Length: 149
Image (cartoon, rainbow, N blue to C red):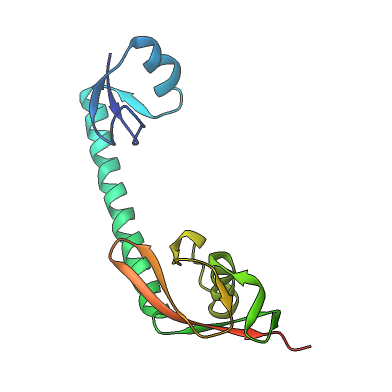
């Protein structure tokens, strides 16, 4: 049975591709979950409209990412942690940095966007790269200061 995929389906194909699958797989899995259309002329027009909408959503998402990167680039965040002299009792990782950005600048950054070689274990002011998407990076300064008693 020939179907047109409405979304990317792992190990089968991408949005808009016409694929040949077994009838049972189409009837029991792809069609009820609205992952595919049966291959007809009307379905082809529908999938073209969905492709346009998906392209517009992706363009809007990239534009929003670009604005966010411009907004946060060059800013700084402060993280307080327990320390003895220069050494932290714990460490400051990607989660703490993402939480500090949300708290101080009200910008939601996924934890996976924070690029660190290893968590910080000492006080200081390192620069941290935020890789939000391919080609969209920002650099922020992280102030790691000792908690005052």
